[in-house]
Length: 174
Picture 1 (cartoon, rainbow, N blue to C red):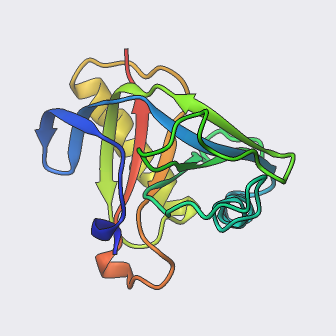
Picture 2 (picture 1 turned 180 degrees about the horizontal axis):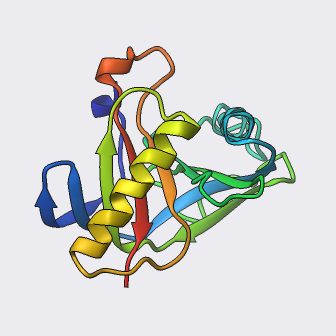
């Protein structure tokens, strides 16, 4: 379950039901880019980075799995997706091994202030589109504007049943 996995550190600034405004601490991510549809891109990106953390890297080092897996939203996307794993807090840019695969980068991500809407079930393209629209309505309601692309955060392994799954649509805000 996701509760057993390490997650990024953030502070909840405001909350209303499944909507939150958070402030995230900087984090280190392993990121890859995939040019395909949303579903295929998330699967391909997940497998690629999972391969890296399971030891296919310059030091044959296994790295603990964390949550969530982040991906670019499919809304308005022309088939160019970024998929990222958050690296465990015990690691830094200097202590993580070099990827053996050329299309994985290790970088620092500074999300800062983020608007988030939580939803359950599978994070299908249709659901993401629906919940991104709802999140945009919250942004209007709170007089907030987004800064950059919307992201999808998936917290669970594929074996978790839909009623128990945790997903989020999120975007940096000004």
